[in-house]
Every structure is written in C-alpha cells, then in structure tokens.
Image (cartoon, rainbow, N blue to C red; front, side, top):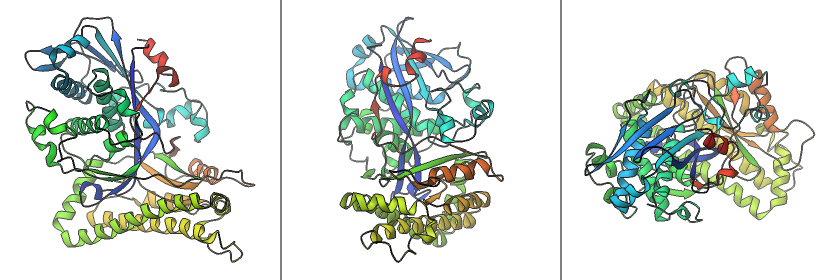
Length: 494
C-alpha cells in the first residue's frame, strides 16, 4: 500500500450565481463540501501497458484499457469491457498525453511496465441514500446516514444511480486526472498540500481537469464545479471559453502549451470565501429531477431573445450576489472582532424566527450590529430567491418551482435558519439552507433538528438530508489510505 497514490476532490454547492457564472462578467459563490471523490492508483499484476479502472460501488463497473505508443500515445478500451465510460477514457487519454509531453515517452513507459489498478469511489452523499435508509428502517436524518457503511454499494449500474447534485462528474474527473499527474510525476504531491492555492502544480491540475470535463461533456461549461474541486470554497469568475476551444476541436494538438499555468489566457479568478463561524450549510436531496443542460439552454435562449429584460434581471442578481458574499464575509470579521458577543448572538437568534431577530429593544448594543448583519443575510438570500424565480418565470424554466418555493418557505421560517435556496441551475432536485450552529446546547431543539423535522414530515415532496458540511480542506488533497475509512478494504478486495 505504501506505493499507492490517493488523491481526493470535494463536491460543490453553488449558493449564488446560478446562470450568471456562465458569463465572465459575473461571479458566483461556490462552497466545497465535506463529501469527496477518491482516486487510488496502485500496481496491478497483469500485462504491461494495461490500466484497469473500477468503481466498486456499482455493478459491472470495471473497465480495462491498453496504452500504445505508435508514435503518439493512445489509450484504447478493451473489447471485453461490458460497458463504456467516456469520462474515464478521456481522463486517461489526456492525462497520459500530457505526461508524455512533460516527462517524455520513456518515463511514462517505465511507469507502465507494471499494470495499473485505479479505484474510484465517492462518498455516500453523491448518491441518494433514501432507499438505503428505508431498507434499514431508519428515519431520514443526518445521524441515520452515519449508519450506512462508507462507500456503500449502490446495488445498481452507474448509469442507473440517482445523483444528488454535488458535482460528482467534476469531482471524479478532478481527482482522477490529478492522481494520474501525481503518479506519473508531472506534478509533485506537495503542490496539492501547499497553503498557497495558486502554485503551478495545482493550477496545471485545474486546467487539465477543466479541459477533460469540458470535452467529456461536449461543451465548455462555466467550470465552477471543477474549480471548487481543485481550490475549495471561493468566489468564482469563469475563464474565457476560447482558451480551450482549439483543443476541443483538434485532438492532435499539443496540450501543454494551452494547459500550462503560464498561458495567460487562463483568466479565471478565485477569491477567498468561507461561510461564517457558528453556521453550517444543510443540503437535501429532493425526490424529483431536472435536466440542467435543458434549463440552461432555455435561459440562455431567453437572454438572447429578450436581452433588455434579461440583462436587467442579471444586473440586479449580480448586485444581490455580491452583497451576499460581502455580508457573509463581514460576519466572519465580526466574529474575529468579538467572538464572545458573536457566539451569544448566534445562540440568541437560534431560538427565534428571522422576523423576530431585530425586535428585542433590550438586546445589548454590542450585539446589535451582529444581529443586523445576520438579518441582512436573511433578507438578501430571500431577494435572490425572488429574483431567480422571476428569471424562471420570464424564461419559462422552473428554476425555483412552486413546490420548492413552498418547501423553502417553511424551512426559512424556522427559528435559527438564516437563508436558503435552490443551488446552481435550480430545478426540483435539491435545496440548501444556512442555519445557526451554536457552540453550546439549546434548551429547545437546535435549528438543525427543526429543519430535519420539517424534512422528515414534509408531505408534498420526498426530502432526504445529506450529511455534507462545508469543507475547509481547500480542494484537492493527497490522502493516506489508512486515514480514509473504508478505502483500504476496497483496494485489497480486487
């Protein structure tokens, strides 16, 4: 196990900036989650120049590839594979091609004298656990999710799994391509553990993952999901799509001149962001679904055909999104200035509905700025919801469907709930909430417990919580096999 390379990448939640992040003129708030995808690479006793990739959580999820050098490197799937996996195939092809460009053919061939076994697994939150909880007779609560084994078998083929919207494809691609770059010594493992996120090795990993993810999807997306998988939570402004358009259309072109961090055409921006202290994000999987590409296509069509109307909505949303990020960051500053007063306020508002937060004339003067700022976050998040719903009505897209509106209204009215919404492009499949998470226990229910009760008893939609919190691990991370619960068993059971 000592020679095993393990790299993980987190999932994501875009809490503000849906649709706007497609335009480099606007930014979004992306929060990385504690749920992660893991890629583990180790030697495999088989024919040289052979790579086996497996996803043990799914049925019939093993693919074998042969690497050829004639003279350009090519990765070909075995005819014996029972299914195809475009994402894995393209990740192998382009990661190894980049390795050849950086390290030369001989060093890549040397690494392949022993076949490689690659295992890819995702934390349970990436897939709906609703059926698993029901089979175990457990209520739909966060504590119940801890009863499910790590990397639980989905019992279905990969194509049949119900995803929860945490960005599984982006996290998978980012962990897989980065693990290959580390394993073939294209970048050093230290590049993924450095405090400075903008080291060249991590940037190269980001650029490669963005390219592979785009070519696998057949289009250049906004890239916030890959960016979060690489860098963690941040304020994201996308790169100009033209930087990789040439590679998308010319598969024989050299990768390094385009993907190198020294290529100034990579003009994405990441700015520091984290959720305020004594709060936590709560996520829920809703038993309905939406076709994100279809939603995006319709909104962009509306923006093109009704430019005046659309641009007014987008400008207003951008102002609200920026205001939300500033206000959330200001809460962190208020905590740092007076931790005791801040914690007292969180405890105080945890037992009150948002409309009551500013109503107590006896509240100490030192607490009032903190209370006011929490209420500003509530108000701004509600305005963003309203504006997103308006955009959906204008474009004929269910960004926040009426069913979701009713669910969110109930949730946001609970004591200690700061705000919420539908993440990313919206639709029926998920919601997010920001709730107070006081340090000390409360005499009554905590905000988290109140929300869980709403979700478990809600009738109109089937709502199931995810266990994810915000991750402070800053994106890509080098892992030790023994430190990841449940991973060693999957690697030895091959």
